[in-house]
Length: 143
Image (cartoon, rainbow, N blue to C red):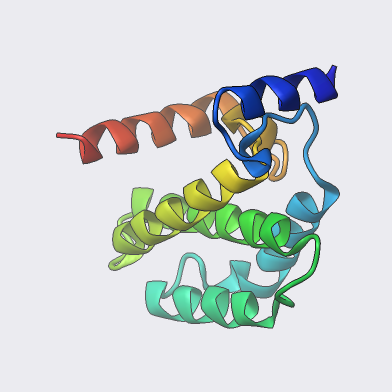
């Protein structure tokens, strides 16, 4: 089945990285958990410290490996979740951080080829609400 989906995506002009997959690469969830363990303590106190932590951990992710894109996706997906959570609590700077990390993880998500529901499994929480927030934010961007 997955070969069929890839063949259809290639025939439609999508690159192999854009072909839909039916499972989340393990590196996505691992990187999300790593980002959470490293940076969660800053999430509700200081958006600048949170961003500094997230960005420092992202620089430590080895480049050029088979799982680099998946790891960066998981990392920035968690970064967005944390920043978005802090923005709801009105932490100064958190909304801007959430916008930055939304753009970063969405670009990586397209490369990995996972949909919102699959990606949501990387970080425990209310996936319906999370996907709704993403859609709302992206809808506001188009205005």
